[in-house]
Structures are given as structure tokens and as C-alpha cells.
Length: 150
Image 1 (cartoon, rainbow, N blue to C red):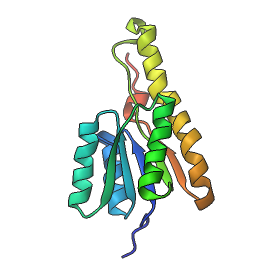
Image 2: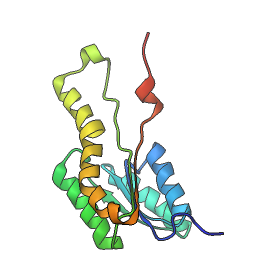
Image 3: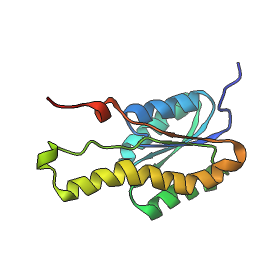
């Protein structure tokens, strides 16, 4: 049976756990060459081990989604290793900590950096390499995005 992503290069941010981990594993099962990107390198490496154990191909990259030169580096590392970029899953995200009325500006800037600046930077540096081959750019969120306290 043909694999839908055979030899396509896919980057998944926040790939070390949760939705990102699932996206990495599924992409690899479909034949993708996967860059597992996570600020927590040990989690990314664990996902790579799972993929390789299932005869897939993957690398782990430690990076911070909110830092421009690190996003550029993530894309460049992927290009250097796999020779292209077909898809990106901008999955890294955070809910911050505590209630909004207790949130500091530093915490708020962190949330904005991960949840808004991160996908922007991924699109800015990833899309130019994806546009010639009909690639896909996906932004995810979790149920935490719709939780309202009463």
C-alpha cells in the first residue's frame, strides 16, 4: 500500500509530546522524513527513537519557536539533512500559567512569543521552501484554547 507522505520532508514543532508527538509518529508512518523540533531536546530525541524503531527516518532539533534565528536554523538544518521541505506543523504552544488577572507582562510576552510569533516565524522561513512543491502548512491548537473558567 502506498504511503501518502513517502519521502516528503515534514517539520513538526513541539514534536516531543502531545499532539506534536502524534503528528510526528503519523507522518513517519506515512513515509515522511521528519524533523522533530522541540525546546526539550530529550523529548524530541525520544520521539526520534520511536520513529527509527519503526523503520522511519527522523532527526531531533532543539530550538525556541519565538527566536527568529533559531527558526531559521531549524529550517536550514532540515534542508541540510533532507534536501528540502514539503510540510510543516506549527504545533508548539503554551497556555501560560495561572489566571489572566495574575499574569505578568513577562508571562504574557512568553505566551505571545510561542503561540503567535512562533507560527509566524515558521511560515516566514518555511513557506518559501514549500511553495514550489505544493506543500502543506498546518497550525494546531489544543482544547485548552477553548477552555473558559466560570
